[in-house]
Image 1: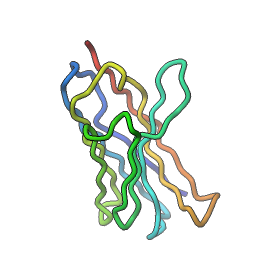
Image 2: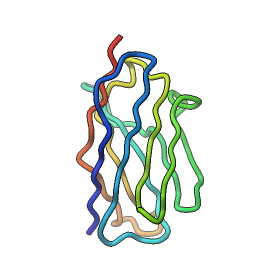
Image 3: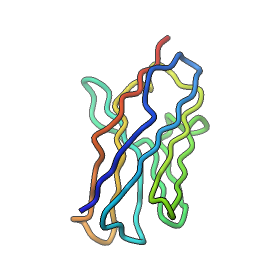
Image 4: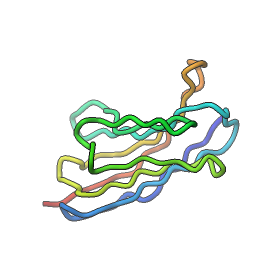
Amino acid sequence: QVLLVESGGGLVQAGGSLRLSCAASGSILRINTMGWYRQAPGKQRELVATITSDGSTDYADSVKGRFTISRDNAKNTVYLQMNGLKPADTAVYSCNLHSIQLSDYNYWGRGTQVTVSS
């Protein structure tokens, strides 16, 4: 089993910054992908950014140039630096850890609320 614990959410004004962290513990595969997803009220969950264990990244078009995902493999932790926040970024942000090779290896954190005021 894997436990993911997010932190760093909160309330910020438009144009501000926040940094989210997600620490994983338990049975962590060496080769994996970690990422952040978000879900706004009344909308489907959407990908924000992902990063593989060798550092390859992928971003949603809506956050490119504003958000940066990174990870510390020694700490099994993934980060999301969010700059230039917009009210449209308001959502619950959830951390994910999964393996492309093993479909059953897919874990989610509880989520952290990010609210951007105008």
